[in-house]
Image (cartoon, rainbow, N blue to C red; front, side, top):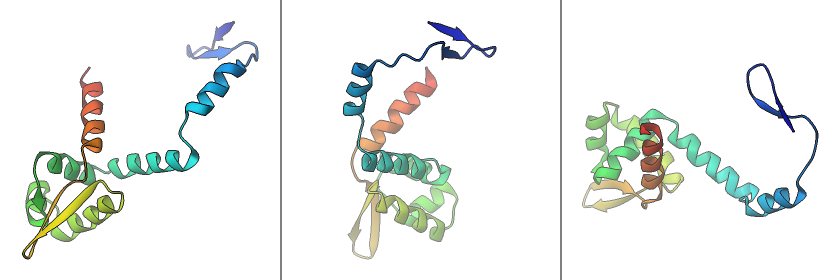
Length: 122
């Protein structure tokens, strides 16, 4: 049986744990290391500059100078953010002569962002 508080949040009137459901959910949850990694991905994407970088790189492979011009942030700031994104395996780089080009490491992050945008626009 549930009752509601004044702010309409449902609360349990009695303590009755469904052990079967709790055990099933515990087994289905990621382990603590995976949860920590997930939290770190979301933290890194919570910065607007980094998110803009990821959004831009989802469209096109770009160099630091291109990204600096596109986002309106200094080359050194872009380099710093790219280093963080590379450390989290969100972006990768490739060298072509003296130029270094950045792109998304794979489509997973792009999929997360696309799904989030769908959620926002519903």
